Length: 119
Image (cartoon, rainbow, N blue to C red; front, side, top):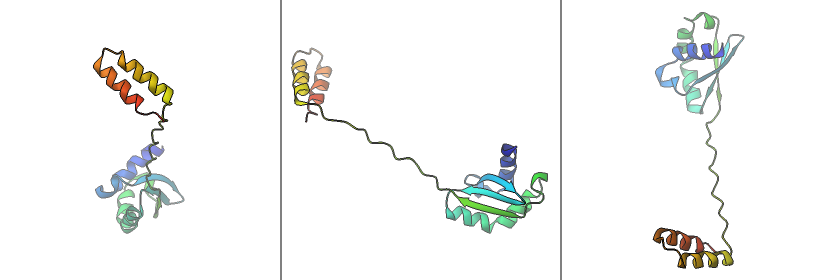
């Protein structure tokens, strides 16, 4: 039911608001929408009469008289930093010794690079 109302609501919105306004619910003639910022909330308020006029074409929104925008900022979770701990000097020595006996040039470079991360 809510998905159907969301689709109908999207049809009643101006094109400039379709991407950023999400239908949250309807109760007692009031529609609540979720918007990402205050600018979009103000645009919804300014266009409320036009939006309501187009929504009243649908039976589900026939008696709606108000749209209430709720700002819910879109936040991206910060990416966790890679936690690399330095290796011990003993481990670095072992890696360098192994690199001396390695015939593969690329592997030797990698082992030496790893050994450079010692405490």
